[in-house]
Structure formats: structure tokens, C-alpha cells
Length: 233
Image 1 (cartoon, rainbow, N blue to C red):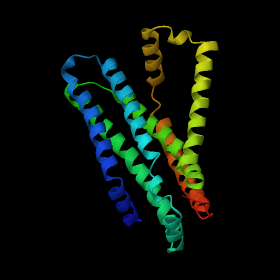
Image 2 (cartoon, rainbow, N blue to C red):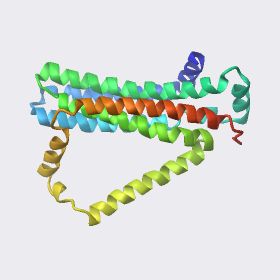
Image 3 (cartoon, helix red, strand yellow):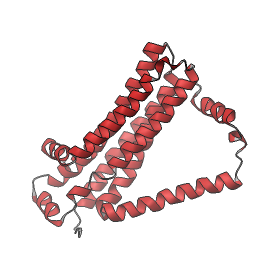
Image 4 (cartoon, rainbow, N blue to C red):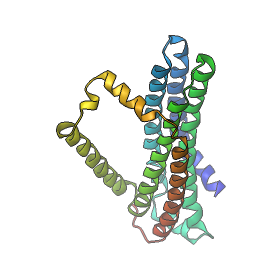
């Protein structure tokens, strides 16, 4: 499996370098803003929004980790190897987990930098980073079996449809639902702070554990689906 992960590192080398440069540069901008005189809640809000952007960027890259191996020749070769399917699928899941862990580490360093240099307590804002990790793991756990079975192109179509449904539902709520809590910038900030207030740390860690279990179950499902004959181009 380690050799397959190494193979992915080589195959996706250029994309990984670009991803690392963009992510680190983005996070470095936040560290450079430490002397700007922001208050604790302003710094926390900025870092939370930055964490969302970073995890979204990494999520976009994760969607393509199967694309280079979608050929009938590779499928036949890996399926005939000893434990080849488990190693193939396992390498993709570990590779995706490594990408998520990289994003968390980079943004965690940004939080630690603000706390150390700015003498802020950003612990309640910091937990949103791990909430985002939970969301990303759950999304990958749901998405990867579809990509394994249908391939990246058709799986990407399903992803676009699902994303469109979510945005349509959000737009419908914005048009017809109660949005009084978001009537102004101040109310949005207040809502965001209320969301993060309180000691819900244990809930985040429980959710993270559940997401990892779901991720493992998704791996088992993907192994079963990969064994079925697929007609790649």
C-alpha cells in the first residue's frame, strides 16, 4: 500500500506542489496580519473563514484522486494482485486523509501563531477547524464509493447534481424562510459567535470519531464495488 501511496505522490506531484503553495501562502497571510490590531473575535472570525476556504480548496483536489487510475488495464492488473483491491482503495483513502490532515495542520499553526503572538484565546474558534474536518470526512465517505463505482466523470455529475440541490434548497430558504438572524453584519457576527460559544469540545471529538468510523465503512464498501467489472475508457 505504501508503494501505491508513493505512486500517487509522484503522479500528482505538480498538483500537490500547487496545492501546498496556495494553502501555505493563504495561511501565511493570516499570520502576517497578527500586528494589525484586530480584536480576538475579529481574528477568530477571520481564521474561521480562512479555514473554510482552505478545506474547500483541498476538497476540490480530493475529488480527483481516483482519476489517474481509471483504466481497464489498471483495474485488471490491480484486481489480479494479492490483496490488490484493498491496497488500491486503501491507498486512495489514506491519500485523501493525508490531504485533509495537511489542511488542518497548516491552519492549526495559524491559530497557534495568533494565540502565541497576539495573546488571544481562540480555542472556541479553533474547534470549527475540526468541525470542518468532520464535514469533509463525511462528504468523502459518501462520495468516494460513487466515484469508485461510476468513475470520476459520472461520479462528478452526481456530485454536481447534489451540490445544485443543496444550493437550490439554501436559495429557497433565503427567499421564503426566516432570515431575520442575518439581517445585518452585526447580527451575522453575533449568530456566528453564539454558534461557537459554549463548551462543545467533546461533541466535536465524538463527531470526529464517528466520521472516521464512517470513513472506514466507506472504504469497505468501495472495496466491494471496485471488484465489479467497470468499463473505463
